[in-house]
Amino acid sequence: MQRAESTPADVAPLTLQSPWQTQLSRAVRDPRELCRRLGLDDTWLPGAEGGHALFEVRVPEAFLARMRPGDPHDPLLRQVLPLSAESESVPGYVTDPLQEAAHTPGPGLIHKYAGRVLLIASPACAVNCRYCFRRHFPYDDNSPSRAQWESSLDTLRSDSSIREAILSGGDPLAASDRQLAWLVERLEAIPHLKRLRLHTRLPVVIPDRIDDALLGWLGNTRLQKVMVLHINHANEIDQAVVEACARLKAAGVTLLNQSVLLRGINDSVASLAELSERLFEAGVLPYYLHVLDPVAGAAHFDVPDEEARELVAGLREVLPGFLMPRLVREIPGEASKTPL
Ligand SMILES: *Cc1c(COP(=O)(O)O)cnc(C)c1O
Ligand code: SF4
View 1 (cartoon, rainbow, N blue to C red):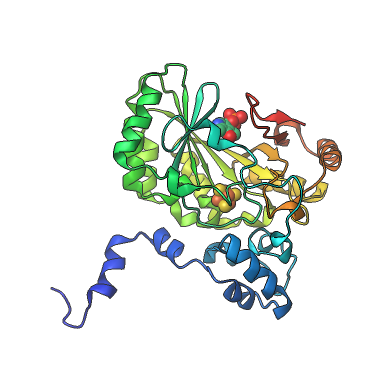
View 2 (view 1 turned 60 degrees about the vertical axis):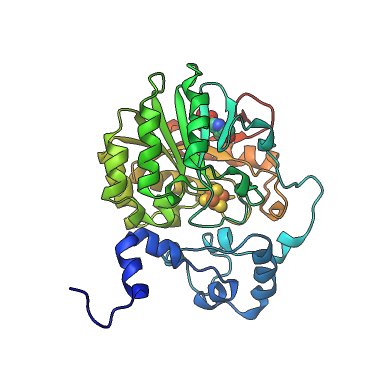
């Protein structure tokens, strides 16, 4: 029986939202609040507010909790705190550096590489990373309805060279399990599809995302499952992330990681080596280390190619071969990522 004093407002969210959705909806979205929570002084505010106006701040609590209070150079904070440098225009840094607008055969699809099609399963992200090449992405044109998905899926159905569907975004795991289960059910009915890959940062920023509902649709598909996480610094991997990875592995998911080489965040041999070590402890293999895509507003994160190569050479001296990420760049028009 309903309590007499309850109102629709305090009942509805509890029944409709999973714990991870509640965490997502309560993410810090105010630059002033972000600075206050970390005890940063007011000198950081004008830059944070200027950048926020270009690409909104979004930081879930579980990720914020891994930052060191009072340290404006914390490597996790630096990934999400807008700086005044974002508002400067730098030659060569553009809004669509990968020219993805040219490779969309249907709503929500990007087909650039042989055998693999990328599906924009959700336009949203759980965290807004300042260096993101999608910070200017026209998501409004790429959030298909189910009817549009059906016609996009026809593209996959009719092309037997496609072996792998990659759920991407945004972050595909920002979509509901109902929506994802619906999509995966259609994908696994395509006989020539062998693999399902997800590119996601959600298990890192909100580890509770890896719940029973997710493990239900992901664990039961006939497709081989690969998840490419996105972790840039060892401090992102806390016990909750380790446990989320263990649940995924138990469900038969192969875990890989991609990072972006970022000035002031992971641009040292020691930092990259520790990241690889921590990843492997969590059961994750390093896959790619991307150099920054030249997206407007992110030039201050750039590490020049020469320095990137030296870092990777230094890394090779301290790590076993299987813990070495491949240093790559994405060049529009190329048939794969390009090794540096
Ligand atoms: C990066 C990317 C892929 C995956 O490339 P892999 O080298 O297989 O990891 C697929 N499609 C698009 C559009 C991509 O950008
Ligand atoms: S797409 Fe990835 S890198 Fe970009 S904001 Fe979302 S989580 Fe961060």
